[in-house]
Length: 117
Image (tube, rainbow, N blue to C red; front, side, top):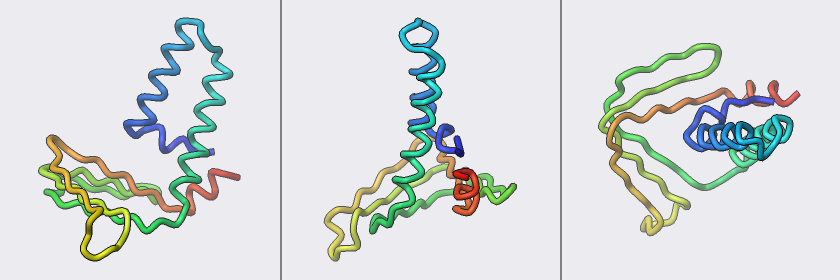
């Protein structure tokens, strides 16, 4: 099972919350591990589903690298645009300016399939 999604904001928050619960003795380490494994599985399944949602990121590319079939991009002055459907006019389109930097990690789907086995 791949733990790649734990590195995002949501995954970081989950790991931190579980660490607090384990430290306070409210849950055991085994349960925390099971929750993380369920999170990994759920994220993988949710992102595998075919969706008509589209996204665009515009900004200044500060850094990019490609290592072991994983692309990492870091952008500044970014503008994120998302749309749930491809309707015209785009009634469901949202646009957000981002302060600071945006880090985008793109993983080859083949790596995730191998991680499942």
